[in-house]
Length: 269
Image (cartoon, rainbow, N blue to C red; front, side, top):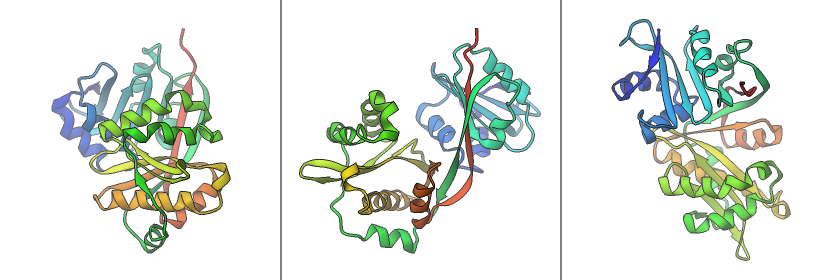
């Protein structure tokens, strides 16, 4: 059976998602940061009995849906909930879970990215973090300077309109942090986290100015960022589909743990 979840179900949600905290960092972070009683966010769970252990959970965050399940789950039941939402735009999660929705909801496009994780400090990371470089931890006063850099990066071009708002919100809410390096008063490289929770965080926004590439700046700053979070007992996660980027992350000790899928939905009439 599938039913809406509320604050009384928190322990059951955390029991299920906590068994795989990296793949579930968005669900865990949203529950920790926003709870269950929000207009922009809803959770549903599947269990054999009303108060039994959850076997699957689905989160709606605005118009996006995130699913997680261990084994076979009621895909048709969850798909029906999504079909009722005429504003639904995307389903994301572990590729195996998302693929279970194929044929049940009309999709216009599907993308996949490799999902990697770093759990502990290692020799490669320590070596990279020891390379001399003046690195600062960002405050809200640095938002414009950092976004001026990312505005120039092709892969971030589609999100320039929201980048300042998102970065400011992450820094103010402490759900993310950013490290950066400057030269002549301008930011030349940066790396950030998002969706930070008590167990893990997602690395995003790794950027180097085109004129300063090939110097190892992104590796050095990412290493500093990772070391900062690992010292707090948190694991690090990231998505990538660029083989060159993948090589950099693996040199720091990241290991592939799965594939993340994003299914973009057809607009419902």
